[in-house]
Image 1 (cartoon, rainbow, N blue to C red):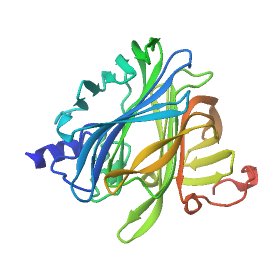
Image 2: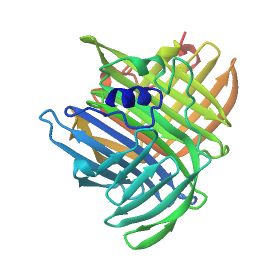
Image 3: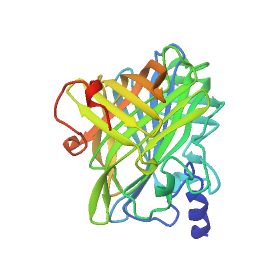
Image 4: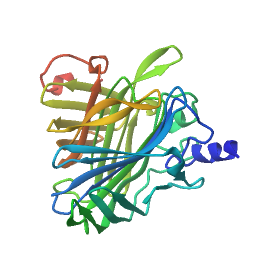
Length: 336
């Protein structure tokens, strides 16, 4: 039964992958919701943790990106009840799927519905955002995208105050494996000033590989239904520059180029997995801004600023950057 479930999960990255796992394993979904006026930006992260000794617990971590606070709610492992055919998870009185999220937590209750979801496309040989890496066993951390953008309906009661999310926007992704990378940069926004149907996900990470490592990267820029991919497995190139205030990330493919300038902002500490145990810590902001430019055949087809952006810069980032200089890339320093 676990073999059947595992094979099904390979072709459905959004569903649970941990069938048969008992130790050194984690899995979690990241559901971001932002109210239409931007007054509330929340990230809700349900998941399961199994440490090296086999001790297990389920959890829901909540980040209030506006107030820069986070809470961690622990559950018994047997309360974690995932579907074996789709992204659907029941955890105590809480429910998560690609259709809706129902929360029954201290200070956070109600249901938010997800409308017009836009999943990452699945193709032969590339079930999700990881491309053919989806078939590689023993990856330290795997990644999936459930929806690059969708609209919200419903209301949450936040510390006794009713907050409508009607007309807001959401985003859903997930991770599973043993640990987060020892160094990575991750950013995401689907709240752009001039474009309603635009969403960006970009990351660079240290990837252990057969006793050594490589610097891998994945990015997807979704614009009005079209997805532009830049990843290690597509043969794209990347440049990464980090200062105390900014993160500049440039991807270049055969006919397109994606330029991102992120402005760092206040964040809060989140608990992260180490060998399956939720004992690590990272810092995430939902207040960053991303200046994004997309060029196709040398012509700018998109140039806008993303708000309510998620931004994480974690670990020994010096292994990721291409230079320690703080200057912005100029025309004479483009990727060749």
